[in-house]
Length: 314
Length: 302
Image (tube, rainbow over all chains, first blue to last red):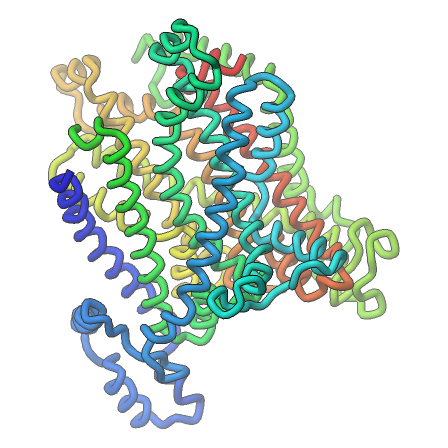
């Protein structure tokens, strides 16, 4: 097991390097000179050159990348061009908001999708199955940010039950925090649930068709025991992997949903930084989210090896 | 399915072609019997017609402001009401289908072609080249898709062409991985060995023997990518980093509508319905294609 984990970690290193190279280089194609953006239109050529030198923009790109990467390893990702504060500090304030949204959405998704997938597979071909699968198909086809807008129209504008946007920290006032996070988390979580429910159903149906399940049935075990004790465990293995990849979709989705609900998380921060050409913030934000996604997938891989010994020894 | 027969040459060049087209006809019949596929096809055709005939369907110029008729509900002005500038929302939604269809089509085109070539090359030659290509694809896939598209859009600036480019970069790795996997499994068959022993050049092995055998998973992935591209374009335009205003894109119209959520909900409802219906149609078609081409699923549902 230790060897398996070590090998996975080693494989992640070159990918991590490439990820940071992409995060760094993409932003260098941005049209417009950051120095000109900071100083405004009336800056003289000397002032521009001085600032470019101060920011290190006059050095060759590979040198800039090496310096940036060196800083990143030590936990220094530069300063925001607009607020002049350390990027790491700014991101640390916003990251918990995005992560709590993503985790909340993931919980909603699993709570909805696993039971409905099991019901659909267990009652295959009945109206239960058809209704759940039709709902899932509609869910897969609905943009999450539009679902968010519809939820606001229904629960905030019409019924007035929940706030239409804004944020209160879960750690300051848990009840209020949940009220502010509920609609955004539902709009992300329900769509994710649609994807996952289809997966749970397909996976469970495949397992239920296998020989060992037939043997269990032939032994005269109750259907409940067959499904829950024998089939479900194996059926959920691929679902775990997909849940890991879905976390990346969630992180991307939070960017849009945070905008709909005016949540001050990473996504809105990155978008505002893009519009303001605050490139250290964009680089670092993109890097953070990509690294979190990689870590989640790494954890899932390890978990997968733990759940299914065939992978570990393969 | 007709594509696969054409890609594998004439019947004389490869006797398998005749068998294939028979299977294709059988497949099409099965597709027609699947009600989900029929609904999906109808939806996709309806939106295609909407995009092609937009000038005849839309009652008004989608960009024409009309200050006297601002923010009017459906019924009072037009089928779907008017927006903050008095523009007809129905006309804007009709024209919006053009951008969605165009982006969907070209994103599939520009991610499938490089992805397929990279996957074939990677799977066929293996070794260090394979390693370099696939690690690079891994790195692209390590980004949450929408975030990568966002970063690329930040670099390139908002325009329709740049959206297509950004999303093509995001979706190329999925094609490369898929085709590489398929090519690796096909490469073990004897007919590839036979072709190589017969002195066929790499080009022939790659495009005449490996490619046709990867077509069915490729088509399924193309339909999924089409759906994702439409959703992503809407999201990017909603964020103001996609198709620039005042061009009517469904995401743009939704962004305009977000400002009037209290007294103009119709601006937010209709473009979203359009997105969901088109994506639903594409997904239904994609599901039907997958059931058709994945033999493991055959007979499982019915």
